[in-house]
Length: 135
Image (cartoon, rainbow, N blue to C red; front, side, top):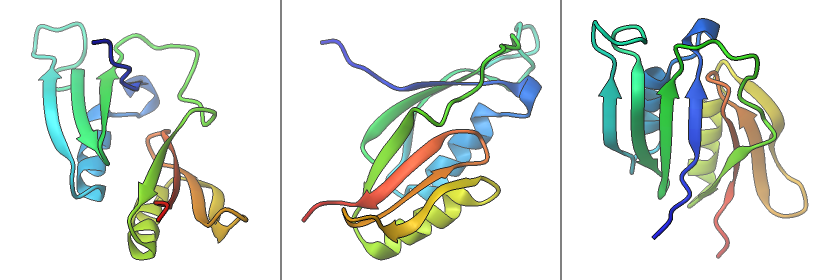
């Protein structure tokens, strides 16, 4: 069966690192796991240790990452974000705080008429919309 999996291309030439992002997300989301972690060796076109293709699962969602050895004109856009339904207000605040560290807060944690919600861009450029799971 076909499956759509979000794929994020990081650009080491811009200071981005798929490996650092993976480590951070696996730390922030307690239920995370590594599915695949394929890195360049000394003979690869990418720098040794950078990610050819990695896949993790966090908050029930698989994500694929890669470090591009080609410098692209585009960057990660906040127009596409990951939505996470948190189980509690404490979890929402913890995840919001962790992901917004050294990042950008687009919408601070507040009730915008549809329950507690926040939108952040993390230090890697990925954006997250965080709310409470519906009861």
